[in-house]
Length: 310
Figure: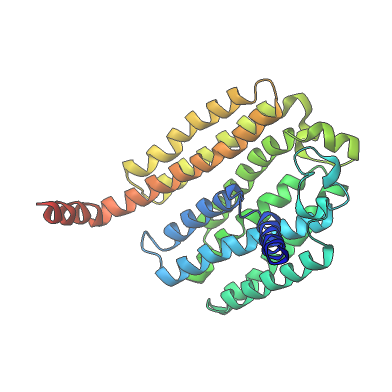
């Protein structure tokens, strides 16, 4: 009986660590992943180094986990009063602050070892990524622009990808970084709309509170700018027709999200937020398909597949 309780306690603790890192809710990983892959494929002209891609994929998971742990450590005195966050491990007491801090050190250490496999300029840039991850949770206390800081953190993998693969940051990388930053402001405002009433009571700040009744209009305008930048980049990079299907299809997602948030119901605002994952998938898939098609690899893959089934 005691052994059964001990095993149950261990699994409960493991589950709490997973929840603390939000590995059970991978939407944040996806939203960080797609812009990173887009940057890697553009920087690598459709053929990024496989090792660099693997490092960035692991880095996305680790740094998102780092950000979540830092956020919960900073917000531990507030999360218990917000409906959406009152079951988080630190808020419920399933994990102690010391345990969360030890996990944070382990995650940062793993991230540091991972980035050592990349070139030196990228290693230095990773320090900025960590700084932005630490800074973000505190911005909710002092400014309405926490979503801008989140966008800066989520988009930082873009210049890092270019430096890792090309050792320079062309203006296209800055344009992509700016687009991803605005995209994050848009979808994190949708996220913050779900918590607006609780945040006002707690004295926290967000763009959802700042924008007020103009929130949906501003989100749509930001999304239009983002998709316009993707279209402009496509022309500048001389991408093919397949690429442009991605950003043009994006306007369908924008319209859907606008309709979802019509009544500003918290659950629908969160649905709109999560829908950005599918927008990211669409942008990357058609970028990838276009590179494959123009390199001939697309046809080669189809031909090999036909031979294997013949």
